Length: 391
Image 1: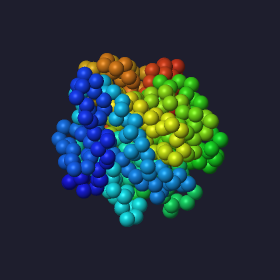
Image 2: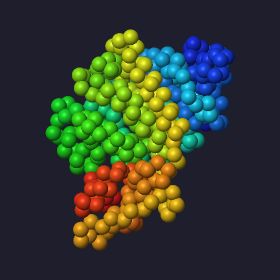
Image 3: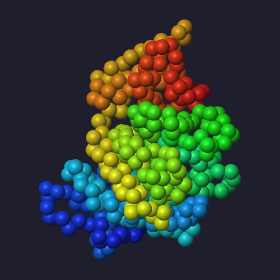
Image 4: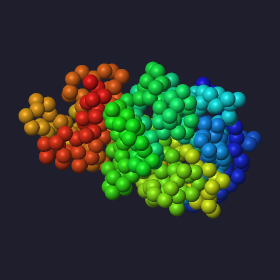
């Protein structure tokens, strides 16, 4: 499929004119779709930057459609520490006559890129575009996990309305359903009603309070490593560091922590798309938020370049296997530790025959703390939730 029909060019100011090859900036290693230029050749491209100037699904955040080019202004000034990675900036997806037309274009573009092992880096726009990102996986028939860095669950109140505050409900209710697991990272309790928390519990979704995540940021790495999609609402970052997150408050992740999460996403062999949403340049102060997103993308690229390629394979010599028996149970918990990265997984394939559609999820990212918990005769929460989903 020719995806170029869905894109419009961006300003030539984002292209490179640098001749000092020893001081490469990101613009020097990126094919940018600018005026009067050919659409980027995608043959060897690994990462594709995509702007989406769509805000019709936003709630009281008019102006967030202007974010992509603001982020580019700062992104292409950053120095590239990698010269062996093919990156393309495909420009901005053209807005459709209706928002559904835009969703269709996003779905078609992303499914084509993902099918060709190209990771889209999406700069929105409003967060309801995560729904269109999800539909891309329906196109290719892949059951997936989503991780959302967000102070809210975005469940909305009207199940028939799709917007930036209800996109998760639309995904949950969508049929056929291709969502295996949803993880929220950094919800803020005072924004969440009890019914929403109960729903998350009943669906066996993973929800993680801001304070708990910030207390041990390393524990967020397995949460991110388990995701196919990461959706980052910039309102999850505190207003002091990201004033252009329209709903950002005094509490939230710091800019440094946001960059750390982005790097974890880049390092994950499983992750195949990421999006940054709800940045509104109108509320920005000296480009602070646009600059932060640019740095988050930089860290994502750095994580991608440093991927270890150690997603588990059955009986691989690259892992150390640990078998733990819990109490009087007849079942053993099987842990794998990568010799390449020291990262941990749980293998759940031994617990009954798995449906073919879920076979991609037989290895559950975890941490050393989960192994310690099992050694203390306690079943890790991650293991238990997955078992409930498969019953």
